[in-house]
Image (cartoon, rainbow, N blue to C red; front, side, top):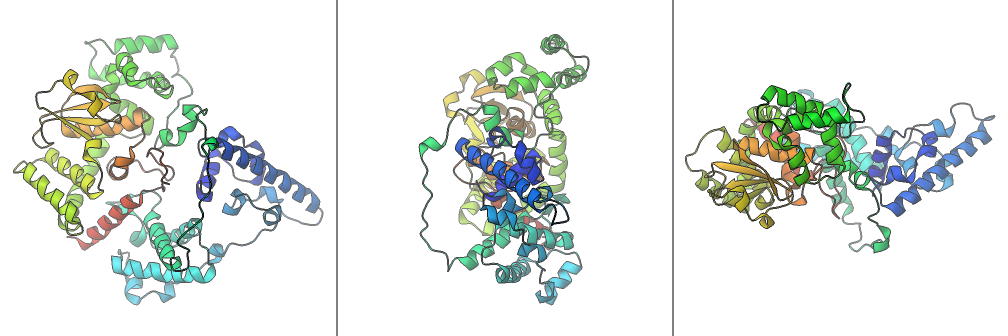
Length: 503
């Protein structure tokens, strides 16, 4: 757990001053820390608060101005340090750091002043000059310092430096610049950094499974959601009326408008069952309409505030041509394996045309571009295969599109599997199948599998407009995850450069 992540989590809890440390409990830290770590950090934070009270009371007669515990938190105040360091405030170098605009080449400054995007060459030169100045100020530069420097740069020239695709700001807009700064810093340090580091010793006793699921998975489950756990039933509703509405949805004579209303009114009960960990079979029996295109779209909108298919189609209209153009004309020359995948896809597609076929090509090329596993997203079966005939042990547990045919292009039928259960065997189109698959990750509290981490996050940010500033939806692994996937950032940056090249 890094200092930055701990700081972000404390801020998400509402911690703003030293005085707030007294209210931190061990349970508050469990979503972000292991139990033993949580106990240690909770103890340190409370000790910090006591120390600040002591310092404040001893200096009240001699020191005008606010006591230490009323000061805003800094990154240093969130990391255990000695009591002396916590009582001796200092100005961080990054607070007074000046971007060396006057040292930038004239070509670069002209580009920035004209609100145009610098070329990759100019951007690398800009990063090199800025990092050189940063290393003159400090020999140990944290990611937090890189973030502050990137913020200053992007705020001055947002049109030129912000992470954006077709007008949509990605994340907080400065993550790709932070990534470049950090990479350059690591390159500069590489010659002085020892190649062998002593690793921290860990034992199996340092972790436990006794944390409730809703605590342990809260960060990834709530990622991108605005109403993950509704606290109250809608006005006028009771548990009995919720059951009545649930049963009414199962009747064959209910029209689509009434179904929308019923799904919206029973959202509270649906979320409670999902968040309690009810399995997919139970949900399918009790809420069969939940897994239909219309039903899942209503739930997704209430959960995230986003229209599922409408948002995808709107972004698709703006971005798919540029993305496909980039993959076909630029990315194809960067990797021999990608060229082979592109050639194979073109052969499978043949003369087929239409938006649905373009989406299939785009998705399959994204998987290949990120070198991610196609069989983690698609399961191919015989074109005449029925739902009950599918060998489910071959299907992934995460939401999977079951393609009836040898390829996405030759198939005319698709199904959706969630937790190795066919939840919808009559999906009308490939775009609908993609939206249902993606929406299921959010509606049923399912984390992105690591095998699809980059592809799903790219779709999430660029086509479904879910753009959280913090956290991740990817399953927990031993690999640390940044706020925005670095591989996604690289593609976003390349697309931005490609946009200005106007190829």
